[in-house]
Image 1 (cartoon, rainbow, N blue to C red):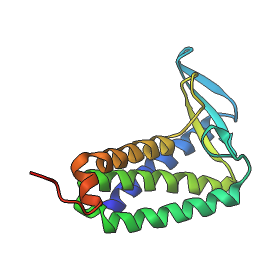
Image 2 (cartoon, rainbow, N blue to C red; image 1 turned 60 degrees about the horizontal axis):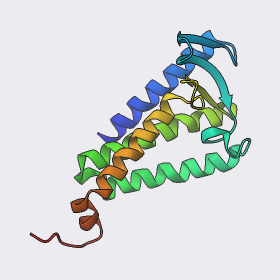
Image 3 (spheres, rainbow, N blue to C red; image 1 turned 90 degrees about the horizontal axis):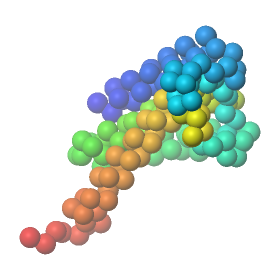
Length: 154
C-alpha cells in the first residue's frame, strides 16, 4: 500500500505542475478568489520560504536520504500502524515530487498562492500532512511509550 500512496501523490503533484507549466507563464497569477487564493506560477530555487536558494545539489542529496529513510521507517514501523504508514507514504511521495522538479529543472514548481503565505505546491501539502500524521502518531502517549519500549501502566 505504501508504494501505491507514494505513486498517487507523485502523479497528483506532477500532473498539477504539468498543467500549470503548460498554461501559465512564470510569475503569471490567476485569481480564483480575488485577494484570497490565486494560482501563481513561480519557480522556487530553495526550500520552504525559498531558504537556501540555489543549493540544488544539497537538496537532491538530502531528499534522496529522506526517501531512503522513509522506506526504511515504513518497513520498520509503518506497516504495523496505519496512520504512521500513511504519514510516511505521503511525506515520501511529496519529497519525490519535488525531487523530480529539482532533477528536471533545478527548481521546484510552486503555484498555490493564498496571498498571506509563500506560494507552495501539492507535494509540499502532502509533505506537511504526512509529517503532521507522523508527529500525531508518535506523540500520542501510548505510541510514545511503545516506541520507547516502555509498557503502559493499566
